[in-house]
Length: 325
Image (cartoon, rainbow, N blue to C red; front, side, top):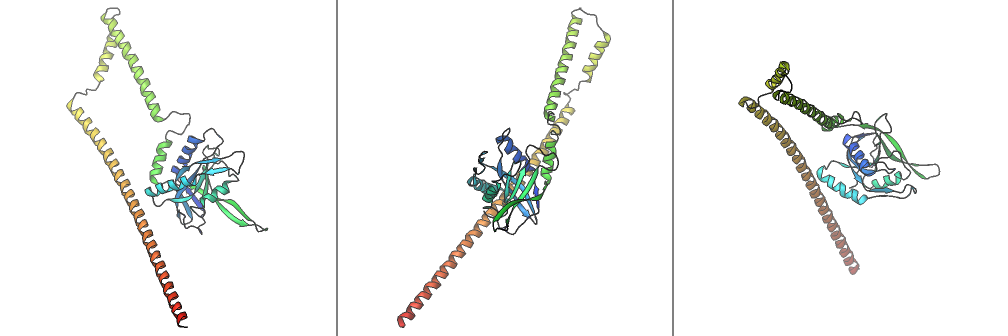
């Protein structure tokens, strides 16, 4: 599970929107309106001098607010989660960990040491879940550096890295769709607004129809005289109503509806086939890696047996020489 990036020193970290959304969701589910912070593992890959963080998962984490030396992170749970993520995407490796901050705490260096079990140079990212800093991006990345002072003591400090927000095409489309209703936090979403507008329109329509009904009932009963202009307008309303009983209109609406559903069906079918194809490729990659591991283990065992055999043969030859002497 450990990765061979011992000599790798990145100077740039790219965080994807899905990671930001996952961290914010983690915080609002567990630590909203509290002084607690949340911690989790970051997944991604190394591309030249850049760390591309594409995914993450939450970890059980506790710390004592009074005693800064007392903290707990479930690394066993982390290993189990990582194994499951590997079955979905083999390329994603553990590249570091995240915290909801908002600042670096003294024992973060100790937590960082836990993640060195999975990667030699873990990236530590602080996500601003409460958007306290209105300027810049809501993420800061750090990497730990080890230096020896004049007294020969090892000093560990966090060094800040350049951080950007990058997104793939599907992520850009998803984020743009979500941001349509988040321009104003006090504003009702478009779906809710449409429903409210429809409801008000229908109530207004019922009120007008009730007034027309009451007018016609009173005219028939002879309580009020007939107004030709009102009767003309009512007749005009009925004339403007569409006739849904015509065969051509029914056929056109059926064709249009079927075409729309066909496009939806084909798009979901293509999406499912692509996802299944990626999953199969991932399974094949895992199987090939397991076979390679087995072959390497078998070769090592054979080499060890040959060495043992050679050593035994040498011992026998030495014993024979000693016997002759």
